[in-house]
Image (cartoon, rainbow, N blue to C red; front, top):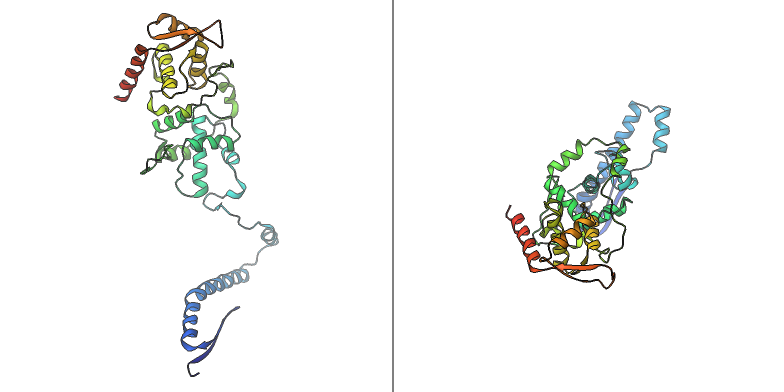
Length: 316
């Protein structure tokens, strides 16, 4: 019983009381002093500072009303740019930037998430799909191409990917941040200009299911960079065939894919002329779905042309 100890400590409204073995009480006291006392002292200091400020400079009636009605800080508040993230979504964040092109939209959407989490934001082509969905914006036909163009402009760059994860991750570059910070919002009068793109065919095609993001387009040269309609037609058929999405094509199928998947201008007449004038490059058969039309597939000569185009673009 000689080693019994009773101890009581009080700091403002914070109290510590212990009784028992002296060693145990001493240990509890040390924990209290090391962890609780500093926090309590800091709190009391703040209270004292507030009381002092009120004594020195009493608030006006207007200030009192504002203090009483001001909402408390909510999660995701960012004092550095006065944005309350709990009351901000992608749509409201982008409104201040006016009318955005698809490339700018992807860049600024990634910037929104980077600002919100206050650290570098890593994103993939799958995230781009989510950007469009969250912003209530019509989906883009080729999100991979959007990312490729942003990389080419130096506005985004490859993110560290030691494990080789697929799809490839990206992050906004320093040039991208500079572009965003100096961006001048464009007026919405540009909408008329946006309505003059290549008119996409509404005809039905068995290839209507195709999605550019599923065609591994990073392995192939961009259709838009090819010089002739013949090269574009052959490369389109080669990509779809190589990715095991189809083998036989109506002329209308090729026209549909080039316009709707690769977003490039081509006419049905150009496609049919290519088939008619290069019979040694394409096999032909009657279509089962359209008895009045023929279907075409690549022969070895056309395959060799496509592989040469790929090789030339790879070595550049």
